[in-house]
Length: 448
Image (cartoon, rainbow, N blue to C red; front, top):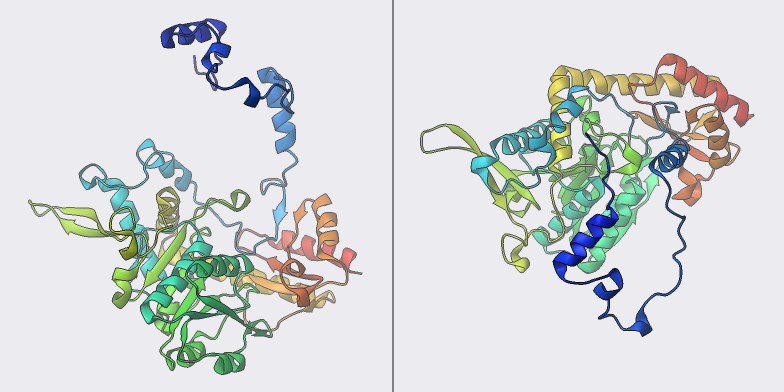
C-alpha cells in the first residue's frame, strides 16, 4: 500500500525508547534542568485527522490566485511563458531530480552533459564566449558580476542604472557593502538610462556600469552608445538580460558587453510564487578564470570517447577562501536542466518565434490602451512590458481586476516614488487577443 505519511504508533515509541535504554519521553529529556523547560501550551491548533487536515489545506490553497484559473499580466522579472510538456517529464526522472553537484564525472555524465548544453545555449543567446553552470537567480548573478568587476579593475565604485530591477539593485548593494564597494544609481530619462548623466558620473575610478536589457520598464537600452561611454574609461560593461528577449534582440555580447547575467526563468521554469529560479552568468574569454561557480568542460577519455568534467571550480569549497571567485554562489542544476530542455524543445526557430510573439502581442496591447484613452509613461521600443498611467491607485485597480479573474500588472509606486499610480504591464506569448481585449476593457472601467 502506498502511504503519503506513516504516523508513529505507541508501540513504535516503546520500541524506540527500549532500544536507547530509557523508560519514557520525560526520562529522555531528564538532563535538561527543570528551570529552563517549557511548561506551557504551544499556540498551535490541536491535531486534526488526515481528512480534516487535507480539507483545511485545500481551502487555504484555493485562496491563491494561480495562473491556471486566472489570466496574468504581471511580469516584473517573473513571467508566465509556455513550458513544453517534456520539461517536467525529463526533470522528474530520478537521476536528474536527486542530483546536485556532479563531483564524480565517471558516474555523472548525463548531468554533466545537460549542464554543458545549458552553458552552450546561454553563450549562443548572449553572444558571449563562456557561461557557467548556473547560479541561484538573476539578482545574485548580477551582484556577482559587480563583484567580479571590482576585483578585476581594482576599483571601488559601481554605477547601476535606476532602470535595473529594484530587487536586483538591492542585492547588488548588499553584496557591495561587505566588499566596501560604493554603488551609485544613474537616473533614467524617459524610461532608459540617461546617457548625459552617465557621461558626467563616469570616471577612471568606476569598476563597472550595470544596465538591464530590456530594462525594468520594458524599454530597450541603447547598448552600443553605452558601451562607447563605459569602455572609454576602461570600466566594465555589465548587462542583465532576459534570455528570451535575445531570441529577437541583438545579443549584448555583439554590442561589447564584458559580462551578461540574468535569470533563465522564462525557459521552462514556473513562476512558483517567485522561486526557485536559475541565474546564468556569461563572460568574455579573458574573464574565464574569474567566473564564480562552476564550469563544465568537454574532453575525451583514454579511449578517445567524448566525455564531460567539471573544468573549473573556483569556490571556497575547492580552493583557499581568499583565492575563491565567490564564497556564496552555487548552481541550480535541476532548473538549469529545465531551461536546457525547454530551449532544446523550442529550438532556435522556436525561441525566435516566441520572442517575436511577445513583442507583437505587447505592441497590440499598447496600441489598444492608447485607443482607449490611456497614456503610456514612456514611448519607444519595448519587449513584452510597458508602463501605463492610471488615475487611481494600482493596488485598488488590481483588486477589482482580481475579482474578474485577472491578475493585473506591477505597482511601480512601491519602488519608484515618481511613478505613483503607474502600472507595469507584461504581455507574453500565452496571452490571447481575447484576453488582452478583456483586460483593456476592464481597465477602462476602473480608469474612468
